[in-house]
Length: 269
Image (cartoon, rainbow, N blue to C red; front, top):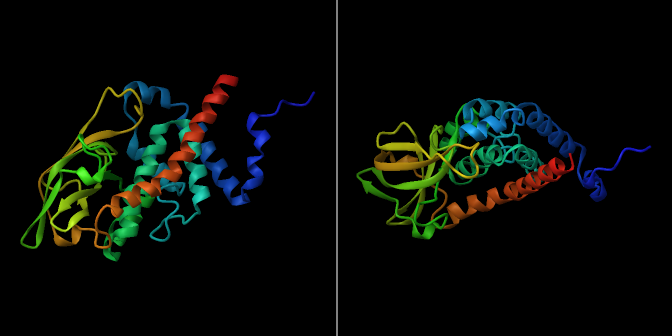
């Protein structure tokens, strides 16, 4: 008697993928099955994950900033990145979020809008997972609508001084660097903020209903003084943060399919 077909076999998705796509997908699926799924229930209950350990492991697999070119990034196409996000979110949405925020938000902002010096300083370490990034856009009163943000960056001599708060920031308490968006006299600008800068602090948000296996934080910038070259030079205005959000959406929609697939497979089993 023939084995029953998996429901996804009816769509013949594999026929739409290249051999490389299938290899990347299968590698990430094995990692999720072996590393994430056996642990994720405990992480969910605790509301904590070993973020740095996981980042180094996923960096070794080439998953961090994998759709970016150069600087130690894998340089895959968008479909490969989407398939990786699909498999990660089949394990847990928080794990996919760690990868999306690192690669499609923090790393993409530096890659697309940063200077060559900024790219060389930050991207290689972020690609390996030795350095973690977060993305400071959302505020408590404005969601991800950057036009209403209250965080400010003001010139003081050659320096910038940042003041404000950011809310619901993935990787916030474990990040080495934050890409922070702020209002200036010249419109909205992005800044690279090392998290050990005086005046920067992050506090974990606990007792969440969802994304519990994810590090989520509030960021406070209280007179954070940065040199002039901390600003991302190649973008001004709303198109900066909105461009990053658009970059992240591809992996997020693939990830939603992974969560749906795992729900279906769990129900069948």
